[in-house]
Image 1 (cartoon, rainbow, N blue to C red):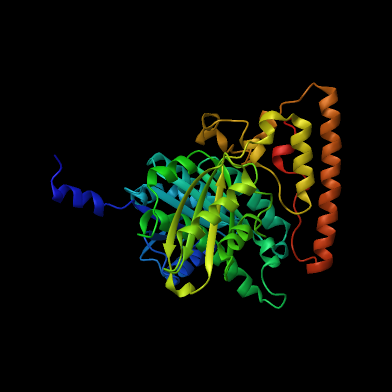
Image 2 (cartoon, rainbow, N blue to C red; image 1 turned 135 degrees about the vertical axis):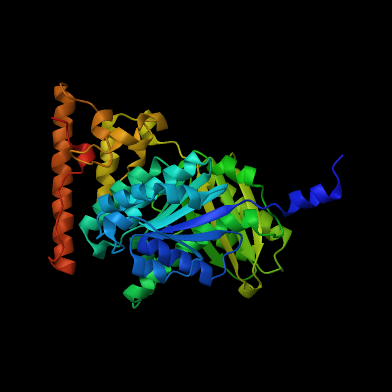
Length: 429
């Protein structure tokens, strides 16, 4: 028979959640979370730039790559960021400690976040943590070099996280005012990252009208690959339905939520939130995403919202088209999405299991390529497939030339251009 002291101890035991901000953008993101009093988590800032790290609001801070960078940053080079993380691997193990869930947040495209985040994610998984990556892709004005770094970094990060949520910064332009400054645009990106972490963490760790068990969240997010996140807000008599509708049709979404198998829904409102509104919001999501959608939901109380209700939907469990389609379909999907910088690397990842990657051979010393799709699509000797590949390469090259020309016209020709064809599409000689 359980005595009350033991029961109280179990009641007071909370899921240990750590939010790790990697690099400059990651540091800015967790600073924003701290300013907005995100609860129930421990914040950790990780950086190669000692000066920037010193400015972090996080109580726990880790400088990596002391020998490699001497505290002066990664110079926008992901390989330097990766080497710095490997140098600080023992410190990262200690930093993660007894965490049960780890959020890794960063801005993809630079040096530290892009290079170090996958290493930190791998270590978190080694500790048995439910590991969630929540990252941004660059704005278009940041240039093609940064975007190329970002998509490769995301491809690697995806191998080591349970769930990966990607926020395309370019889509924030559909949300902000036309006169929004560059600084405010980046702040809005931080705000979206904050809402993503808050929407998941607080329904686990912070008492609300309706909370969810960590085991339920783990069932929805463990080993689920790429996820989609939508955020909606509304006021008035139909606020619940309207907020849910805004969330599932969010401007942040690069594709529709329809097709998910699981979803986490966070409903945040003041104490006047009614059970009928909760039911209406969940029904709206289910009606749009399918009656078989497995939903776990929770509520958080924020009396500062007054009449407003905010709904965050994180959808997981998408069937990867590449698992059922052939090389042509996948290649066409990649091509179609290049024009809006939405390259579908997820299909490549889905064709291989975790065991396909070995940390020693994943980064070959000769080329340090981020992905090995050429090994997956080994089409050498097949003339028909070779012809299709060459045709695809030509179309991609033409599309990239068009995008680079457009970029030069809009932002000038001050940014170095990159190889027209991603390494993972090149044939091995």
